[in-house]
Image (cartoon, rainbow, N blue to C red; front, top):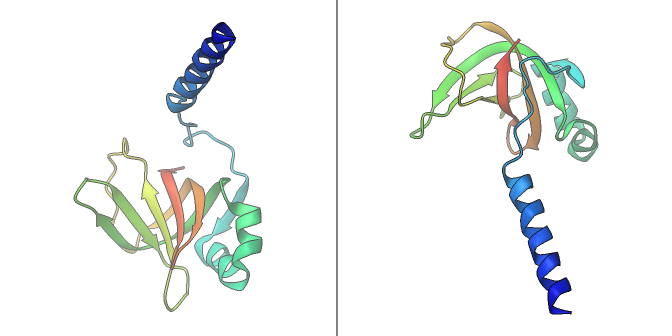
Length: 130
């Protein structure tokens, strides 16, 4: 019995290690599950957040919009806020940390990103320009 328990623990440790070190999906050349404008995505979440989560959550979204703000936090993570027509929110695109491209307010842009849902803004992570 002890041998079986040790074998199961080793198998579990191996699976956990592999999952932890799993490489991220390359979004640069990934085909988008959905192609939307920032106002369309925001309106979908504003109308019915639960339905939008069912449809968009953890999917690759190709989003097009106008940059309203460029923000960089203390850790050096850059995020772009796209104009979405909402009074209280927009679409936040957190850029892939490896990306070293400069962006400016008012610029039209198309990005691929993974949708993580809505807080006050719809959030896409690991975004890369396409």
